[in-house]
Image (cartoon, rainbow, N blue to C red):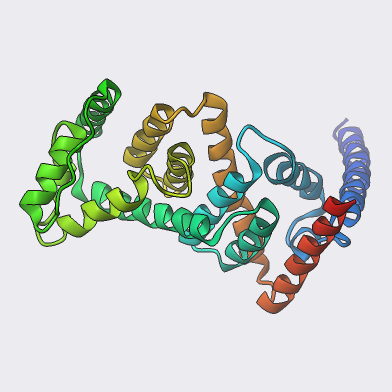
Length: 287
């Protein structure tokens, strides 16, 4: 009986293996048609059985239209890659941003949002704040912002006292994580937030800055930042579909970063492959 079961299992696995091989060849055919070749991290970085689903994942999150415009999806990926850090992903994302039409200013702002999120995450987690209390304060801030009213008066931030006064007029309160911040560093910390994340004049609209922050926060992971950026994204008009897509983009970037770094491909050859892929896509776009 056991022998028959083992034979049956081997037969089933044989059929499954053949199906995996067939699906992998089909995926590679699609890649060749699109990119001109099969990227090395697909051919050598993944087991054959994982190639079809990995290709479907890449297509669904990075190549096919989504709820978030192409340019901002690539900026989310770049922001996540910047602070993993993953040199391969940064190389690829910056190259593909040429196709999406992102400006150097937008690229710099996305990286800055990533850095600010890591800065805040490190402080919040190291401080050991109570998460319930943090969420309550965040909710108070968002309620204050929703009320609107006169915009905060311009204020010179020269020391901790002026920084906290500026926070008070913008947020309607001084949250605990700001109160606890060391006086010597608080002015710089607050000006970092104001000059990028909270500035309505940046090249990247507020909604997409918060989705960038959310993507970074989700895979640090930082529960404080995830909550804050999710609610801030909603405040700026993000839908549930856009929020979920930002999370999937962050997860996909981490997935491919793991594969590429695990493969240990030579960086020069990776750059050549990316350049060829971008060139193929540019040609296709002109047809």
